[in-house]
Image (cartoon, rainbow, N blue to C red; front, side, top):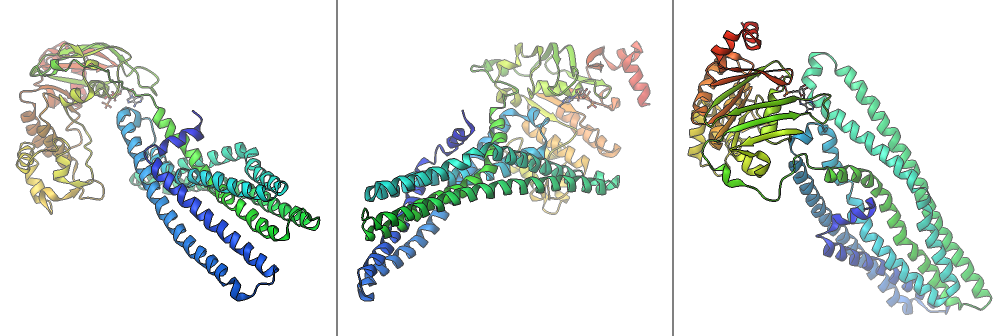
Length: 574
Ligand SMILES: Nc1ncnc2c1ncn2[C@@H]1O[C@H](COP(=O)(O)OP(=O)(O)OP(=O)(O)O)[C@@H](O)[C@H]1O
C-alpha cells in the first residue's frame, strides 16, 4: 500500500475522535464565513447609506463570532493534542510489541540510537500529519468546496476563477513534492544518524575518557551536526518556496476574482452589493487551504520517519511460531535436550557460528561447554532459547523439535544466568519479581538467601526497596550476579543454563556465587558455559568446542588423559 494511504490506518480506533475534530474545524471555518457575510452586509448597508445604529446588530454578530472562534480554536487545539496522545501511545505500544516479537536477535543488529529515533522522534513527527493534516484535509475539501459552490451560485464566472485559483494552490506544490520528499528523507536519515552517534558517545563515555578520545568523538559529532544543519536549512528553503507558491496561488486567485467581479459590476452583470460578499468569501475560501499547506509541510518529516516505522512493522519475524503446539510433552519432569546436526550462521556473520553440532543431555545431567573465545558456546544458548532458529538440523527437547512448543512454554522451562545481568530502573524487589511477578516478599527473601544476596540487600539504604538499575544505586558485578541467581531460584525452571555466570567477579565473590550455583543446580538439567575450567571439573560430561564444532567429549579425568584440546586449555589456565 502507498505510504501516504498506509498512514491513514494509524487512525483506526480513533476515527470518531477525528470526525469530531473535523466538525470543530468546520465550525471554525463557519465562523470565518459568517464573519465574511456580516462584514459584507455592513459594507452593503454603508453603501446603501445606513447609520451606525442600524449597523449595531451586525457589528455585535462579528464580535460574537470572533469570541466564539477563540473558544473553538482552544477546543480544537486541546482535542487535537488528546487525539495525538492516543494515536502516539497506541503506535508506540504496537512498535514495542513488534520489537518484543522480533526478540533480542533483531536488536543485536540494530543501533539503539536508530531504534530510539523511530520509537520516540519518528512517532512524534507523525503528529502533524495524523491529527493535523488529515482532519484539515476534510475541513478544506468541505469548507472551501462549499464556499466555491456558494460563489458559483452568485456568479458562475467568478466561481470558476476561484476554483481555478484553488486548483493551482493545491496542484502546484505537488510538482516539486518528490524533490522535497527526497530532501526531507535525507534530513531525517542524517538526524537519525546523529542521534545514534550521540547515544553511542554517551554510552561509551568511560572508554572515550580512558583513551582520551572525547575530542575526536566531539569533532565527529560536530561534522554530523553540521550535516544535519545544512540538510535542515535545505529542506526549510524548499518548504518556504512551496508555501510561497500556495500563498501566491491563493492571493492571485482572490485578486483575479475581485478584479473580474469589479469588471462585471461595471458592465451590469453583477449587482455591486454582491461584489462585497464575493470579495470577502474568496479570501475565506483559501484560508483552510493555507492551513492545510502549513500542516502538509510539517508532516513531511513524519513521512520520512514513517519509512522506518513501516520497515519495523514489516520486518519478518526471526523466529516464527506455529499455529498448533504439542505442549503436553513439556510436563514430563526434568527435560532432556538434544542437538541433531545443528548448523547456524548469524545474518550478519561471514561464516557459521556452529557447524553440524550434535549432542544429547539426559534429564538431571550437568553438562559443561568449554572452548576458545568465538568457538560458538553462547550461540548454543541463543538457539536453545529460540532467539534464532538453526538453518539446518534440529534442537529436540523431550523427544520433540523445540519448534513444536510455543515460545512461552519453551522459555518457561529454562532459567538462564548470564555473564551480564540487566537491572531495570526500580527496586531490588521489582527486579527480582521479573522472574516471578506474583512472588510474595517471603519468597523473594528465600531466593535471595539461597543466592547469597540477602545480606548485602539488607545493607542497602532501603533494603529490598532500594532503587537500582539506571540512575539507581550501583551494585558490584558480584552483587548483580547474585541477584541474577536469586531470579533463577525464583523462576525454578527445570533446565538451567549458566553462561559465564562467574566470569565477571573476583575470587571471593566467585566462591560465594559458586556455592549459590551448586544449590541452584540441584535437581535440574544443567548446561554450564565456562571460561574458568576450575568451576566445571565435577560436571557429568564436558564438551570441548573449537572452530565452531565439538572436538572432544568426556569427564574431566577422561579429557585430561586424552591430552587433547581440553588438556591444552587446562594447561594454558595454569
Ligand atoms: N549477533 C551476531 N552476529 C554475527 N556474528 C555473531 C553474532 N554473535 C556471535 N557471532 C559470531 O559467532 C561466532 C560464535 O560466537 P559465540 O558468541 O557463540 O562464541 P563463544 O564461544 O560464546 O565466545 P565467547 O567465549 O567469547 O563468549 C563468533 O565468530 C562470533 O563472532
